Length: 314
Image 1: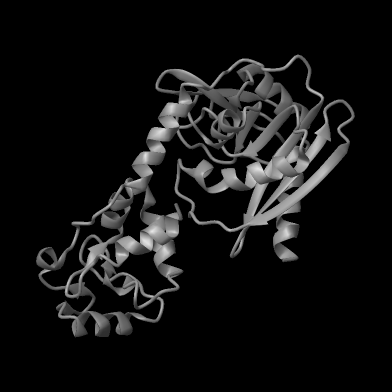
Image 2: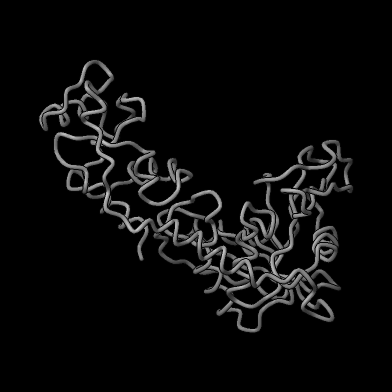
């Protein structure tokens, strides 16, 4: 399904004379985490006024923003019979609409993550590592993916691949795989043989449901993967003070889920390493340490540059 189009179909359910909220729409999608994505999709609405984004307000009854100006929003709401005073909806509880007819797509995605989590393997699925690839995605009106593959012994680049495609889902925390998997799959099909291990800009098992994008991609495509993230998504870092070249274990609900690794003297903040699929904790750390000249490992840095170049030249 096209997630963004589905969202606009929900907004169209808000009747004249009523308003709804960012949070109510996020819950109709299946997860309150989608609230910011709701705001972005409303801001990018190509179908106004058919998709009535002016009927979406803040959870406290204040008007919030509007692309063509707040005065225009007030005018449209009053024309439809909504009472507005200053920056607030009058009789907000009476005007509030939350009775959306929805299939709750994010709940379905969460169930898919839980199902796939049972297939994650955290032991090495290879004898030797010959090549290590890195992938990243840059965005404008489309998604632009970059894959760069390095020889593990010489550290020479042996392949650079880029692709572009439509993106029909916004970024929603903990659901990144559903946004980027199609592009990553397209990159790997173009490369054909695939690297021994794939590094992904995101998390592996360091995820509230143990199923970050690296784990998701690994299980779906049956390849060894490692996640490398710039921010801590969940869990606790055992040691907050890490010297360059050192690491600290990260635990979530009492279990090891990854490592905080300060990869360069040039940065004070660590990166977060976690196995995705068919790679052990120990190997995940070893591979990333071998490729870190700067903050991020070279395959991901190079993939980011390639994806950005593809986007800028489009």
